[in-house]
Image (spheres, rainbow, N blue to C red):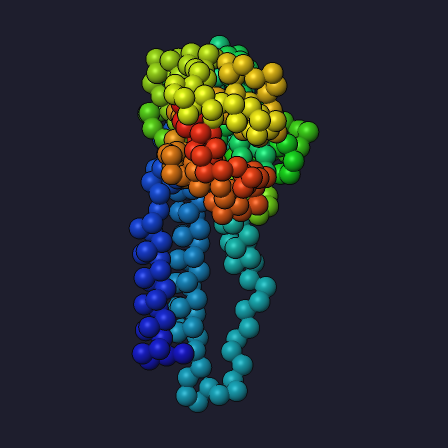
Length: 338
């Protein structure tokens, strides 16, 4: 391939690269860390990239030099050049140099790995239990008695010890702006310590192929100033689940008949609290539905009617046995949960 066809080929690839770079979500970039763990890992990325670039440049320069210097010239056809195998200086050089480069890369990598995985002092950190389900995230704050789903709230400037476990298959917890990923395994806990320096929303994803809806198994880390985080904890410990309207009261009744077997709604007077689906406490305060679409009336109605169309492969059934008025009543009640 050459000429105009070759130029078009490179133009298409260059355009795709530029478009991909422009589509990068800044809240999911490992190149813009928002915490100490992310910064330490970015230093390793720079170090390893620098070493690899140096090796590529040296090899490329040597390759070009050798091709030009020892190319076959007119009159040398069939001539066998002088053989130089067994040069001890060269053999020592290309053995020692890679070892030195590996040591330069390995020492800070091992030191950083142990440093960022060190168990934090409980008095200076918060523990959050993370359970990965197909296809949503459950978050438990054992010291506060609070549960939530698909959004984990943390205070800024404080280490968060995430204790990770999978409910069904292997998942991976990854918040690119805060730090590297950690696997979640069934029946075995793993640990990841992260910290956010400034308030904001940091997007997270499952980084392990876990099934049909893997690509949509998203969550958010929402970092607050400490006083706002304390207010959020207080609101979650005693959620307001009282309906605010007649339609909301009808929705409360319908939720009890159709939803409470899988979901929990505290302070609503239900005799049972489901645990196979995400908790619905303070649902109206969440920014997204199912971790993928904005939390508003239109999207919630769409989710209720056709959950497989929004997130294929999830275990939420379609409520096609309910009328539009009944769906609207449930939506109204969920949007009144505070």
